[in-house]
Image 1 (tube, one colour):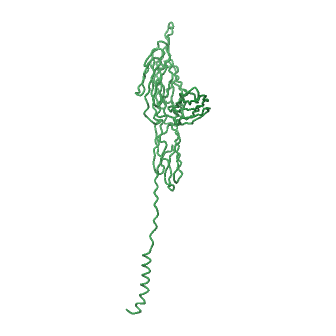
Image 2 (image 1 turned 180 degrees about the vertical axis):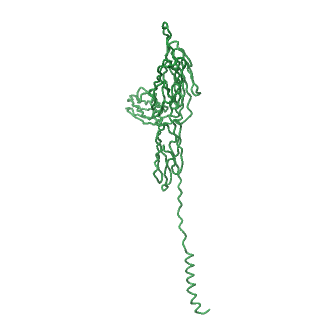
Length: 400
């Protein structure tokens, strides 16, 4: 090879060497830590009563993980703002006056949760009412959850209802006009909420001619109470029947968890004793009802006594409450499933303390327990127990 050839080839070889060196020393792409977002969502309530309410969902995740919330139902309102890291989402359930349960879904951090809302409960204390041919009036009691609307439908032209619509519990006065027929009785089926009330009116009869017969003693009846709340743990109670001597009545229950232990029938004034078993359900809305059917032979036919029993209705309370020897006042605010207005009352106590609310009175919903303790003049400590709903609270006071 000539010197010229070597001279020409030299630069190409050097350039190739530079190119090869550059390729072999090219740095690799930097490798950083991968980020994976996991979400844990806890919803503190999934079942709601007809009044609706507010609840929250808590989200646990990494501080840089983004998420949002949304609702698939127009009756559930969710704060849909985007968030990063851990947080809490409030959501609101609107009130509901239908009789059929409904369900809807919310999505939080890509996780779906189903919420259920029960419908309104409307009951009648009587299922049928009878009128004489010359007309008259009678009352029917409507038992409905607060805010639940109801309407009288399919009322016949010969009967009027006052009021004919409303919300919540009420007493309706029914007035029947005189039956113009002397041979044909008339009947009607009236719908109130989801309940049916049967009306019957006999044919009209002219009063007989001749001397007016002497009036016969009439039997009138009343029952007290007409409704009662039974603790979720079960319990016993009694119903009083007031009537005249010689007036007969019967009492019956058709549900297995409630038994009449005394007073299934009687003549004249009497008492019905009953016993209700424990409600095995643990959620407050899993309530159940039972009726003691008290019946007698008059146009009003009888009266139902409704016994309502919630699921676990115990309030949230701290125990014990401690006092020094000088006494004083303490109070506790507590929750008793306020959307469902759980019933409760205060029982127990001691002579050296006063309790508010007063013992024995029935209240509903959230409340405040106020305990006032007198000074202890003894060197020995003393204690007592107060029952709020089904929750015992121990009161302890130190000695001198």
